[in-house]
Image 1: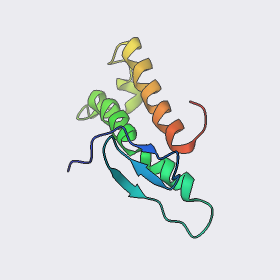
Image 2: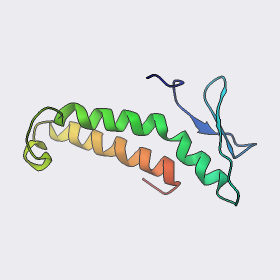
Image 3: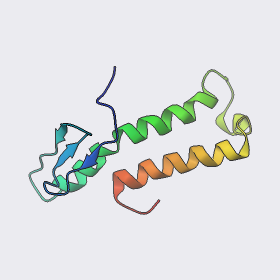
Image 4: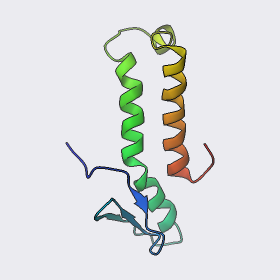
Length: 97
């Protein structure tokens, strides 16, 4: 499966629209005032996919509990992975990373 390449952002003029570089990606309908929050969550999808792929790259197929194999990537790479995950979460929730 492939998705429209990111980054995706919430349209500043129409805060329920999610846009990519050259096109609209999604419209977040809501029966209440959650449309902008929903659009923000949708806009974080490419970032979350990238963060999860980076995380999984180090731990898949190891057959070990994650805490045992956390030392596998270098400390610098671990920090980078966590920053990527926190940035995706912050984008989705609108809270600081």
